Image 1 (cartoon, rainbow, N blue to C red):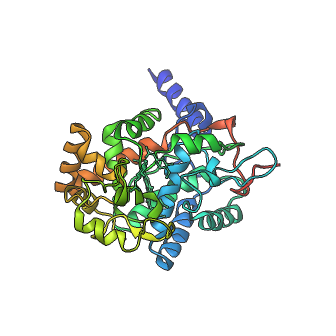
Image 2 (cartoon, rainbow, N blue to C red):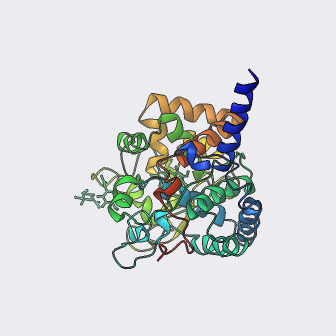
Image 3 (cartoon, protein in one colour):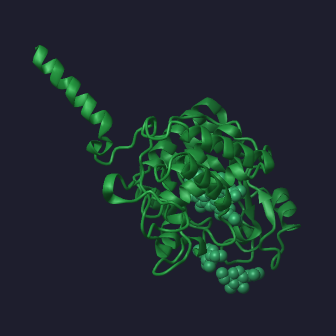
Length: 327
Ligand code: HEM
Ligand SMILES: *[C@@H]1O[C@H](CO)[C@@H](O)[C@H](O)[C@H]1NC(C)=O
Ligand SMILES: *[C@@H]1O[C@H](CO)[C@@H](O)[C@H](O)[C@H]1NC(C)=O
């Protein structure tokens, strides 16, 4: 008996000091000993950036998503083109759209000063996404940590695996399922569109020629569509910005789901959550009714998304500069 207790003690001690024995498992205390100030440093720089520009919270939250859907949450998104690496930043979903890379650089620089080559860029993205959510009024959660950074990027993965705003509901759901995420995760995580902006080019098709017959999308509220057309013309103005949630564009809340119920989801991919599947329709209604339920599920689904194929242990590296692999 005493022997088995001391065996357990030795085992837990070993486990505590040899995180790699968890074999691919992420956990919130990963940097508690190696870089105790890591989370605080990330939070303070994200807070400063969001205070300067409210939209930055949305941009940082989106970066984690665009990272995780391409080869897993491995910071592949952050690599610039160089040598054999073709940056994901030039993909269709990211080009002229993904932003916030300078904030990630600033966090990385501060962390390299505090504890060199310890905190991965992939973990910075996961922490910044959580902090951005909290700073805008959303739920909090403990972020499982211990991801390593990739030594490569995938432009084709970025083009093909990240859902496009005019993908069908089924295509979008399939892209989530390929990452181990289900319809509950899809609807909850789409709730991210409660903050941030979209360019005219991402939803123009709905305003003028939804299905090739020269008519706008009939699931889009007509007067809202008319209002959008004034700044999103048939041609030109591609980069003009629009808020994703017109009710409270910088506040993380469930008004995104209320917008959808009012036929005022901005993107086609938002509105189809109500119109193309009974399961997702039920979830949209539930989250519109119950903010707490939305927050609870959002936190769970963010943790699930953050667990998509992380590189752990020796299967990756901790980049010194998030834009470049180590030499
Ligand atoms: C369900 C499929 C999704 C589609 C089709 C989609 C598509 C888009 C599009 C087209 C934009 C506007 C980009 C632009 O015009 O520059 C956007 C913005 C955004 N997306 Fe998504 N998205 C999806 C899911 C998600 C998820 C899962 C998250 C986060 C967990 C997310 C977070 C965001 C945020 C925060 C913004 C605003 C970014 C900013 O203002 O910089 N989206 N999304
Ligand atoms: C979706 O949008 C892209 C980019 O604007 C366009 O090339 C494509 O034809 C659209 N797909 C459909 C099915 O409308
Ligand atoms: C709408 O799109 C279809 C092809 O998708 C095209 O043939 C048609 O000319 C367009 N109509 C208008 C009014 O732009």
